[in-house]
Length: 213
Image (tube, rainbow, N blue to C red):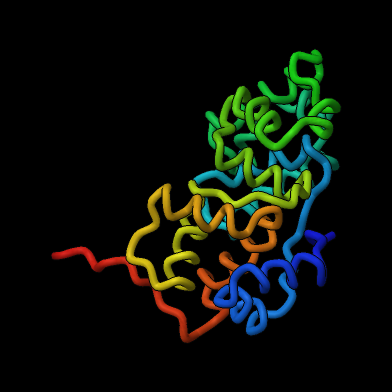
């Protein structure tokens, strides 16, 4: 299952920003997987923090093999030591166990999240151990499929903005200019900025100043 968007979002972004429109034309449709189950998405994001995408995929596959399905019951039944045995750090295992406990007890009402605004969702998610603003924003986009997510804390988004618009630095004021321009389809803009940052348009380069040796 991929993040869903179409001509409406594309035409809007092209009409608002010709430079981004050119990037969209060169890259084509971007397919980014989503996981609409909030519990497994939170666990997946905690697993993936501060490790490579490849390592995250390996550990996630091990976790699914060990638990069968990543849900409240299977995670609650697993011990922290069992989670560590598949490559999850002690701290992350504690975060995941704490999250399962809060969902199971009702302390964290997972069914209520869907009906909240973006800011309210972030406010609830950051109360969880191991979940910061950036993780909450990624969950908004890749789990809840909210249409207007552009993360200032995402280094690849900043890199994409530098590359596409030839900036040396993206400060908060400049970022907000782009966020307003792309709204209400910031999530689709994010997909293309990530693509640009990842080298999808070979002629683009990063304009960040080189550090002096």
